[in-house]
Image (cartoon, rainbow, N blue to C red; front, side, top):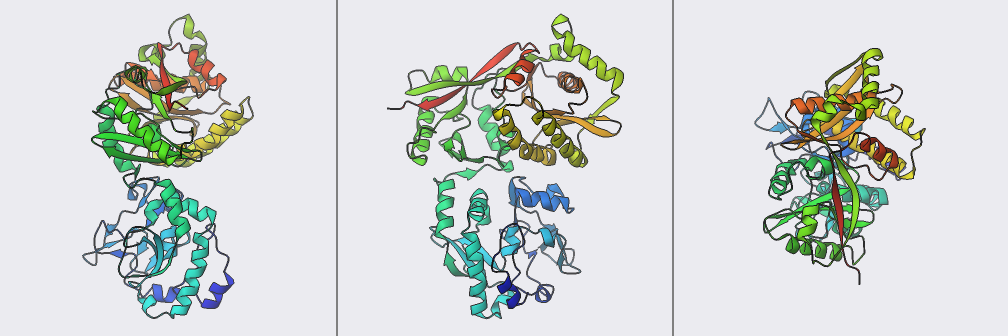
Length: 499
């Protein structure tokens, strides 16, 4: 792109691709970009959650991304050399197959974001590995960098980079520093106040699973929150982080209000000691704000913390049912649910089958139709708020449910997806229903889909069904109570006593 064209685009934003500094005629002759010597090269482009979604829509496989919330792309072997290629790159034409939807990491190049050599500052520099940068006039480089520098100081960009810290690369000696970025550095420090914190990624699932298994959570009375997927699907709404200290796994979340712990510390050390450490972290990071808390504390854990300087408040409990009861719906107590299921079997011609990734567009259409139906009903303010956040979580479930260990089922009528459900094995004896969506214009479909989900879980060996909590919504509470839970599993919030 000519310099005068760049000048006319002095106001750039993340809503449009950034201006390309290197002329396209030069790029197609280059043998550096999009090629890598190792399959795990740290220079692989990083894609945010939204960029992954756009790339998948353009035809790239979801399997190329290790973490649906944001990750570097997996490379493919170059048939013509010993190296590796970005799978979006066509070596024959030297063009990118997703160029109009390429990630910010690629748009910035040949500028690069990296930590300084001492790790104290984020810097922007120009990468001398790009052959064009050896020929370009330094003045032109600096003017282009100034425009990008201005973009990097905008609130939307700061928020994006803070939520995707892996866009900031490690120090490279062959990148010439043009400017430091103190605003971005401060924002990243706010999001990561302790260098031991690590963002929660899909590859962390086995580590967290091991920590959960060591936590001595009660069998069938475990809270649904004691599973990796329960938290991970909200990673696009909340920023989740973890660290380990002396064999104890600490899970943290950062919200607009501040830091909190979505689970108590998990590990072999005395719970009281670990809780005290976790709350001390929160107090320091939140600067004494009362937002500091630990959620999803079980009755058993609460008893072990007796005598601690904590104040307690209860959350909505999880609803636990016997799988046999929900699979059969026998007796007068289930008369209304059984009648609705019978109606679906008589009139709706519904078929069930396992969810496939190809169902994603149909599930998205159904979710939006269902959400509209819910809004037209008697949904209160909290319900509307929860509904707004839910679509991002469902998007992640549709795209990566199999890798998250979810069992998905779709209900179809006349070849149209009318309902879907996803769940997971919480414990060897308990199956948890994570999400369920059914077209509300089909009477009884929700009840039918829930019954069939419970039947499949029972067939798979589950003795209990955990239907999660009611989120404090009266309508949802009534619906869950109507299925006659065998128990409600209490969940507590622990906060430090205020002086």
